[in-house]
Amino acid sequence: SHLRNQKLKKADANTTAIAIKLARKRPELFTAFVWKQKTAKLTAKRNGWELQDPNYMPLDKVEQSPFYVHLSRQMNKHKKVPLVIDIHGMKDVHDEIECDVALGFGAWYSVDATRGNLFRNCLAFNLKRDYQGEFKVDCYDKFSGNKNREMITLSRTAVVLLGIPAFQIELSKKIRASMMTDEKVLVALVSAIEQCKSKT
Image (cartoon, rainbow, N blue to C red):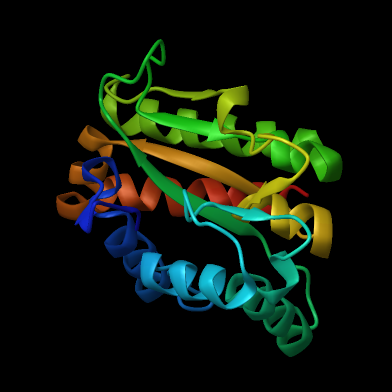
């Protein structure tokens, strides 16, 4: 969850709860790892860099990050290459973005672009089937994690340094609220992930 001026960034409300709900619903499929602002600040202070956004870390310092360490341990523990889903929140009206689920696959293209597009199509189909087009899904390069060569996002950390498939998912306020109250919306996301894994 992202804090600004010691207050929760409104656009990130419920993202932590959604990650935990996914892990509790299907513990054999998901493990929730919450990257807290406090942890990000401590990591930055200990390693001598200025923290502006907890989603970004200096490329030359990232191996000292608890996020990197945790992913490395998960790979060693399960002897498998996991999938990292970096959950973010966005406003219902977000610049020129007209959808409820915005996906950033730029961090995934170096591993498997086809797989990323398959996930998008599965999720769009599931939501359209159950909600008759109420929720829209699309991909946007601005969420790809390609900010600059010196800074790296959490999803880029997974791909570039550990070879783990990853993507960033931005959820509108409307769909986040629905995921907290309507089980079918959460199931649509779980199902898309399962479909993607089964076809690759």
